[in-house]
Image (cartoon, rainbow, N blue to C red; front, side, top):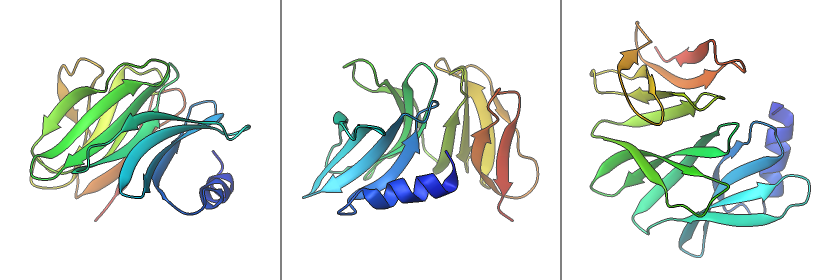
Length: 171
């Protein structure tokens, strides 16, 4: 999505209860994390019609951050639960199935990205003592490979054909 469209859409969610948002691959839907009257939920919004559907109601002690949606409608999100650390979860937006835990990670997770074909997961973790980008299979974890080599790194983004992963050096 064009950054200008993203900002305009974010501003249209008023009053401003949204916390995080991410777009579907076809840019027709946006997944929004909302907090209103003490209730936190993740909502799927049709960009053209404005129709909304709640896809997840969050526990009061948890924060869920939607990060990416694959072509098949798999939503990848991060969850931080008070006292129990971070978790990477996924849920098919087209079904009523409950979210599935990919992996509970003791270290900080700061950014995840599911490849467009839904086969690879990139995530940022400090398990090595520094923020680094890792890639693993999805939905089955398999081998994990560190792909950033120097300094701290974050904000992974897959190229549209999934042949390259971009990330930002943080120092």
